[in-house]
Image (cartoon, rainbow, N blue to C red):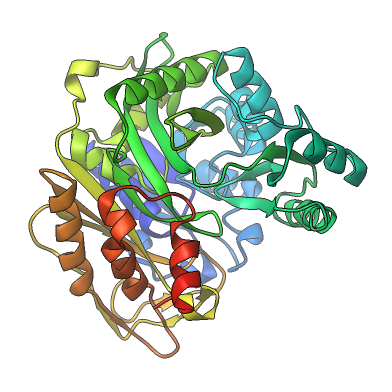
Length: 454
């Protein structure tokens, strides 16, 4: 096992990783931009290193700064958390060349899976079901139009280098497709430095269900269950739960087997999530592999008792999986809500500012992952996530009831700061959500019907 781990991230996930390291007796190094100098993460870690100014491109996305921090502190591994460089094959390759263990898949695997077009081809060769698509990059607008004519509308245009719900847009008619194509290419170039896109048939009324997988270097792989992540705004998840409601045992098992087979085919080592779309007849289709820790991993931890970060560290250290299917039988249900500093009534615009009041819930079977404290400043440079609230119950109804109680306890105030708490409670109260019959269209339909996010 490692003696010292540098956490190449910030916010709640950096603190989350540091806590597991401390429990394992591993020393931690926090890195911080100027904006995060006085963060809870720097106070908690054993050491901290300044890596640059607030813009992420000059700090948390700076591989040279991170490698230099490893050299200065003598860390023997880097945990990237999620986002930033967590799926960057170039950074993972640099770590390998420098003799630093990257806590995640090897760089060639990240390269194959990070290119969404090649990932589709890889999973197709593994026998996973895919939605009809372009079969590769759509290099021109004319090619995009021909593909859409072949597939039938609506279609979704996606960035080849995309991930995390960013760099994609839906075209519902031929007239809008050229603009969607051009805008998605421009967005992809801006976000990822790679403007290539591909096209898939868009599945209306589908659910977004993912399988959490662990895999070691000794040929062992294991699924830890499924999560439903269908409550989204602009493809960004807001509410996640496990187990996914309404799936038959046969579908759950088939998806888990497909996910494990896909991860093995890719040669992935570590923790990963294989994402699927599921239609009303429970047909499922491969979307992508997130070869990293997911924001919503706590719901799986709550029902299985497995510390996924600990497993990541052990797998990266070369240890074999010691868990079997008999060890990870899920018990009960769990749900996670993301508290964001954003205004749902203003197109979810981020609302940075100072948190004068910051009170989060507690109580039985209630977990809160946050890096914020009263007086903290929410920076405009980073994601507006303030906290993740996770509740467990003996069944879904109990978990949701507990979540509503937990959200009712939230008190967050500050000049200019708006929080999405009321919207989250509206989601919980929605009849389709309560019945477990919702799809990725839920939030759009709610807001359209009411004309207001609240």
